[in-house]
Image 1 (cartoon, chains in turn blue, yellow):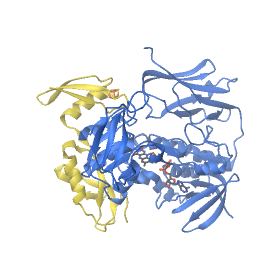
Image 2: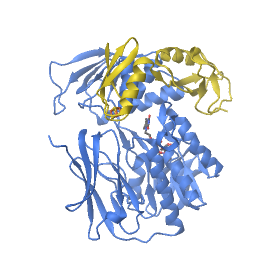
Image 3: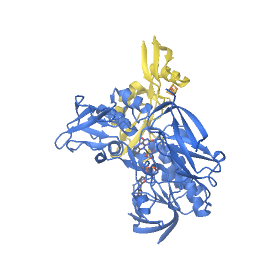
Image 4: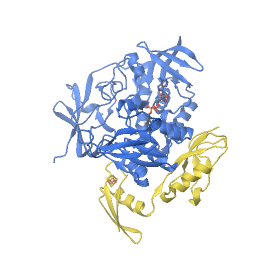
Length: 419
Length: 116
Ligand SMILES: Cc1cc2nc3c(=O)[nH]c(=O)nc-3n(C[C@H](O)[C@H](O)[C@H](O)COP(=O)(O)OP(=O)(O)OC[C@H]3O[C@@H](n4cnc5c(N)ncnc54)[C@H](O)[C@@H]3O)c2cc1C
Ligand code: SF4
């Protein structure tokens, strides 16, 4: 059986940054396995500008950002396989792989970094009634068609969901000559960035209809119109508010899901809220020697954070192979009162770095609130926040020195502003 | 004349009101910090955008492109039109000029991907 010290599953920004960091930490024998025809992951189709402001102090497009990491991987001569898919990982860290060059083979890895990214929530998960005609695409599929294949899926467009990919596609299709009639969002606020609402919708007078959803789809064979309706506080359509909008295309931009079939088959424990593996401060999963980073771990808002997190996973994997760290005292991390989850889910209070960044999202928008970390009823740290929104990932640094010796759980909460 | 706009400086998204007299912004209210003031002054008088898109190459392949820097917002559709008319030849690399001085803006359109 072929052996490698570190196998990296996925050659997107997470896999690339993990590989670079592992090599920098002294690991030689690394293999990146990517099922697509190019490295760079989903960034290849994200051709708009806005990536890398944190990392490079410059607004790059997705392909430009990815290429900087691809160039590093090439310079470091880190081996990779393209057109090669990992079919299975077992609990002994044996990967079953199929590819053009390799055929069907097994690879024994000493350590594995999971970097498979995420995929879009499909329409089935949404339960829209009506016929199932052609002309309905996920926003990401439309992005691929327009940006990689140069094909415009339609000219009269309605978008359901105001996530950033949908907003970006509203602008993109408008500039390509399509008419985007409306973006409907079931929540009373948009999950998209303000900047995207202004520059992708307001710039083109595209209406953003909040508390609105698609209640029916009409058309035989091909979509002809959709019916939108207002919803109440419990997201139930309000009778009498329906409006029919003729269209030939409906884009769904309704969220992303980490892609974790492989993690499951390996027996890696998953978090019910994030959909990604449960990890420690070194991004180790429940299976020793298996690490996770990027969108497979939790859905990120900025690729800069993906790269940073993946660097940590790559260093941890290298450390695991070269000289295992000895385990110390485990402290669980938990979200409550508006903090939906935390990544990592636990930290090692002895072996951890001096500061560990804990990331999470809040469940609803807050103004003038504060984020707090508690060890029992002792407040470890309070960070005032002018604004908190579910669309943004929060970063909360926890200092090793601040963790009390008798603490077994740190709880993160939102402290709401006094009314 | 007053104009309402949303600051894009950060997720606060402050609702700004700019008072414009003779094409000059005299006051900005509603901002929480200085960046909102700067944004409104620029956005009301000379709004600029980076335009990205794709261009079909002479050999039929598609390549992503951008304006190297911001161009006037009013030229967005003209620039998009110029993307559709260009037919550059391979090879192209990140930063290579695909359209020089697009629509008289003084800004070049450059490739954002590599095509050998
Ligand atoms: C449609 C879409 C559009 C997006 N647009 C934006 C945007 O505009 N701006 C933004 O900041 N973020 C955007 N994102 C988020 C973006 O995905 C992340 O910022 C970043 O790309 C995450 O990096 P990653 O490496 O974790 O995942 P990805 O970039 O998704 O890379 C994962 C890689 O793993 C490979 N892979 C998966 N499973 C296997 C397997 N079994 N075997 C081998 N290879 C495998 C995939 O082919 C892929 O190349 C978008 C996401 C999606 C899904
Ligand atoms: S004015 Fe300042 S605080 Fe308000 S949105 Fe702009 S940058 Fe943010």
